Length: 385
Image 1 (cartoon, rainbow, N blue to C red):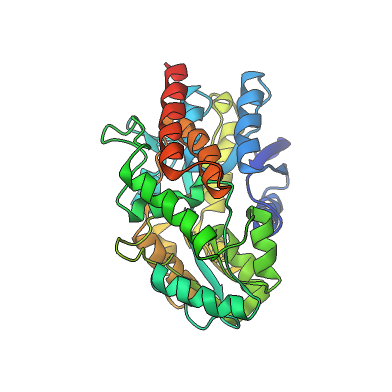
Image 2 (image 1 turned 90 degrees about the horizontal axis):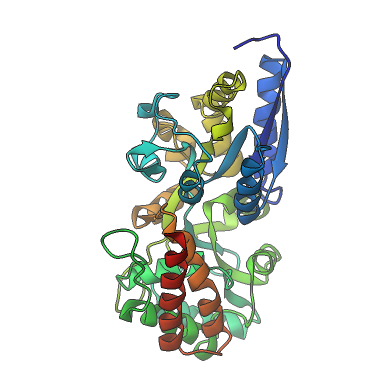
């Protein structure tokens, strides 16, 4: 690396300000610049889907950023379009947690360097409103009755995104793909049971409000108007700052008569655009990634964001082993399942989203929605061929 040559790295990240993630990314960039004054950064926050779409557009136009900080399921569409490069020969990947690496592998190659391990949903609760997390959905319904009597919203979650649906599907033993990993399996009894449960908890048991998207749920929980929220590990840092010791972390309640919900697990990853291949800037980017995922900076991430580290050495940090928040997060991750990274998963997401919303808006039955999901996913996948 030419230390004295000015280098400006454009880094796109999905991290936002609300939970301190964007500030953490910027702090890493600033710390690197202190060590290497010739290297500066332009850190740009983009919402997850906007990052995917904007990167695809920019890369095809020859104006891609130098580095991405994003989620593993972007690897599918990015590799299909040959927009990112494999990292196997650039880093010692044996230093990182195997499960985290697996979530970024396609066709025998690794397409991202893991930053945080998990990215999974879990149940977060305000101990000042509910003493213990309900163990199963029967207990959840019973707790909801008590909370509603106190004019407290029992539970909130993002009812607009199917990422919040798939844990329950897993609890009923369902999967979104057949064993070949690319054929959608959405019109199944397990999906119908999942949609029926979500419908019943909303309309029959009134466990959650009529409407709640991500921001609305987040606000109700932060303001102490909702006792519980299903949210991801990316939110732990912000909630811990607000609630302190009153923040509880537990598994999403077990489905009474079925099994534990199985949230998707993955994490956040550095991905390197193919445009950097052969470029002098690549050495700087690789060095920054090593710096950002070093043991010291992984410990800082644990302390500031309460996220499980992806570096093996950092898992033994006392910040992990002694933290009840991270202990609860890790316990939820144990029953999780790796999120598919294949391109076909985008079709499944797009197919599930409107149909889940239709059930939660009481405009379709679970059977109708499951059938429509399958039809939409099948049609979408035909366009990929």
